[in-house]
Image (tube, rainbow, N blue to C red; front, side, top):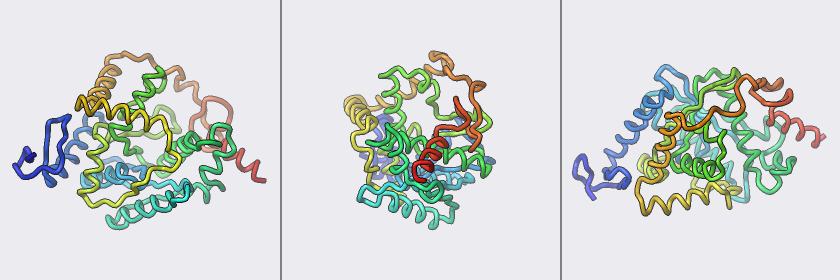
Length: 311
């Protein structure tokens, strides 16, 4: 296949767009499209201070690279989860993140969960009934709290994550299968700060396929951690991705159509407002972030429980 723009040999064929591009034009196309999505969904402006949540993986590092090329003011945040699984997963992901920032002269904020809260994520998960077999729910809860807290305390206007189309479609598929109305209502390229303890969140890569981001990272020479989290084995999200990949193979563009049709349905008023209104939220007395019940949010209760058990 030849590049549509210059007739040189294409390095990627994006079947959903019927578009093949050479290396140079693909590496131009990705930032151009990212800028288009940023403007379309009103994610942020060049004047905003942006915090990029980085994991050492291809998507988050590629996103940081793109924003840097587009000359946005973007710093990185890495959260050390203390996940090993015999592979040194957290150590390697931290190394990739630090190397990326150092080479480009970018600022990387590192929060080590063990150092800050006294326990790793797997250790914190052991204190809960749901987390003893898999720490994923505790991991997600902890990352959301820490990311929001750092962004708010250090004055960032928006927190961005590297969720790609495959991620968004898999989440949408799972929520639709179970008709989780509250989650469907909140899924969006932009999540507004609807409470004083929250910061604005955005997903600039939400319309890019995972293979496109992998190709971008490879062609840009970005070193990233290839291994999946050792606790992700058997995750429903991976199963949903496999099912959607089968559909995509037979119908190129199916995932993109599924996601964009959902966003259009939301815009047309298909979904009712979320059950929990913002006025029902309280501020956690410890971290200031919103919670629906009690004085402490779920994360602070978890940390307090861990401290009590450890004494």
